[in-house]
Image (cartoon, rainbow, N blue to C red; front, top):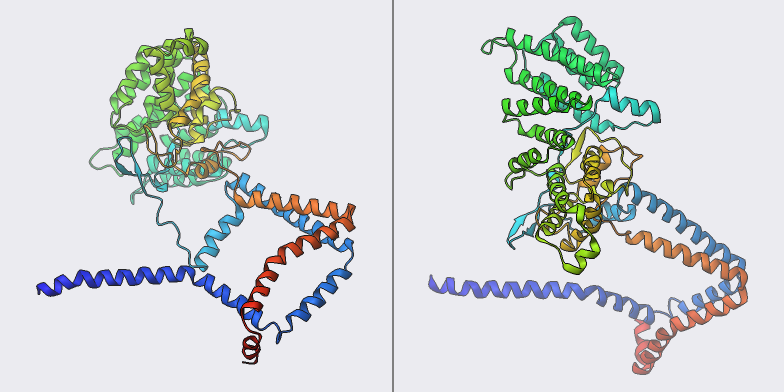
Length: 556
């Protein structure tokens, strides 16, 4: 038994050696096969009459006029130019090369290639240990806590510009949210709830509004219907606030009427609806200038429902407190939510950076800092800016007005361009109010990229930057907006190749047209130089092998 176990490793070692030798031999078998094909062609050149064929081909090529070569190179330049234009358009729209995508998706499986096993790999963390990288499925979208009102804000933009600020994908996500939180999936459901479920799924705004009025006719206390009218039909914030107050009264009455034990619907659905209504009422008060009232409503809401942290009501509170310039209260909120165990957002990271930058930005000077070095407070501000930029590198271009802003979408992707648009849309004014804060941001934000030279592979304070943000942002943001891409993608190889091919063939066509005789001499000299090694190899073969051997081999 011991002998068997002792000989087993030896047999395994021999098997491994045999496999490695076979893999090594297969590596060079293509080269051997190619050499054998060349040898056979050379040996059988007399029976195949290759010399006569080459002679007739050269005679045919010599009879062609320079116009033929001009047409040939011009056509090649035109075709490669069309391919270049299509590749560039495809790259600008989808962020990848069409030829590379087709080769990876269709040709590689046919040729026996192996696709990447998964998007989840092991990467080094901050302390050097291996940790799993977030997969593409984790690039989920979140409800924008500061989303605008469709009727009072998004529709006004459409009336003025004729452009749709929301994508169908974004609105479809909102419809799913409303169905989940306001109606739910229960077998015992009221008739007006069935109407509202269909209303949220309607693509046409007028159809949604008609369905809401139909639900109100069935039940005058249908709070969800008033919510839809406040979101869709109200053309001013004041009108939207009136409808939300009506929805709040209806929701409270319906909650009092229902018995928590014998209710036809779970009570949590009513709670979700009431929380949504109170939050939107606080946002209406914020937009109408009643900021202190809005802050009180948000604080009461967070105190009454502390478990609904996923709604990110604290981000609404932070924005309202910044408008009041209550920086001490802002710091108190950040102390609670800017915790290592809680999920981060651009609002958390950039608000923390704003507070630290505000403390030193008024007297900050790049020249003075380069001479004397950074103080402790300035170093803390710079590190906070680097932390914020690492979390979302798209925000600084909007805050520094290097890119134009658009209306924020109803859903955002954390660390993506959609989140950057939503943050800058509401917080740019707060950065401008802090004197020198934007100047400090302008001087220091690009230094972040020296800390993370390979952001897709290894992060500094956060996980590596996800590679799925561009695709999701293109779904969330309108087509007239140029999506910010990070890290900046290099041009694919096939775009560079087709550009070089187009330029080279166009140059050949022009030179052949202008100098036909000189180009003919140049081409002949080029091909003679190209085939010189082959002729040298053939002469060596003739001198090395006896003529009788080749004669007998050709006879065989």
